[in-house]
Image (cartoon, rainbow, N blue to C red; front, side, top):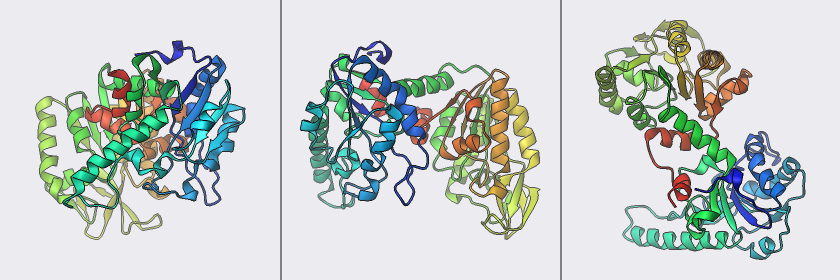
Amino acid sequence: MVDFKDFNFAGLKALVRVDFNVPLNERGEITDDTRIRGAVPTLKKILNDGGSLILMSHMGKPKGKVNPKLSLGQIANAVAAALARPVKFAPDCGQAADSAAALKPGEVLLLENLRFYPEEEGKPVGIEKDDPVYNEVKKMMKRRQEEFAKTLASYGDVYVNDAFGTAHRRHASTAVVADYFDADHKMLGLLMEKEVTAIDNVLKNAQHPFTAIIGGSKVSSKLAVILNLLDKVDNLIIGGGMGFTFIKAQGGKIGDSLHEDELMPEALNVLAAAKEKGVNLSLSVQTVAGREFSNETERQTVDIFNIPDGWEGMDAGEESLKNWREIILSSKTILWNGPVGVFEFDNFAHGTGEIAKYVAEATKNGAYSLVGGGDSVAALGKFGLSDQVSYVSTGGGAMLEAIEGKTLPGVAAILNS
């Protein structure tokens, strides 16, 4: 694989897949430019070498249709400010050959939202899987995706993928396009390299004790992650809404708490597997329950196995946090994905905030910590701790699939060439 840091981009047009899927307010103004700032080191290296940039990204889910509210034209000025130079804009990413060809060294061209083209995702649109012609349409879309990727590839001399947030998708711009560049002209950007290295540090090179903290609302969304981690961790903390499925499966009374009855057998299998493998699986023992699902609802702290009818568990109680603090502070490697309470409500965000503090404290004491997932990252930011963990992942979905043990198409398209 070509090492980005050693490559000389002088005189070359670099086609760079970035993740500029930034949040916008109703006026089309960026409310968080973290993803743009994260790409700057990669982009400036290319420009400083004397190369030019053709930037491509998606924004939102336009589902293959043009949507002005999701136009990347709205962020061109912000990208220009981040790079300290003008940014040209191509209003049609599929018809940008002339604009790309005209680029001079040091110039930047931003393409319109890739997902305005259904070919980017390459999925049949407006047809159900049980339709008799679904498979034929699927084959047709695959051919069109390859043609779209070939068009994108024609704009540049070299391809750089720096969009970890989409690395788990085999889209035209994230994986298929790499097929049109030889091994010496495609590479991972600096941000992607950091993400891949951080995950390898946790999954392949972890120091022990290794603790994973998995939170969130549903067992179904993270079951594969949990099962894969059982072969790697010493401690597995399961919190948030998904924990109540485990409690009910063991005969606990969980009131009106979120749970998935159909996943209870799987929950028991996880508990049994953890015991067999010698993994310390730690569930919440105490919860802060609310009478209604709202921030201002009446609250009470109760035993996790005895939540009254009409109440639902919404945050981790102090006894749970006491147990988890001891586990986290004794760890050498920590992976955290998902909140341990209804983090969007301030009155039920305490537990998640405390987890953030424990992870930061453990990191200060010498542990390696990897944090990913929107609410986990938001918790670090809320408490001013983002710079006090080893690495904050930019791609929640991609990180989860990597932890599951899956191959990420966007990475494999570069590394396996």
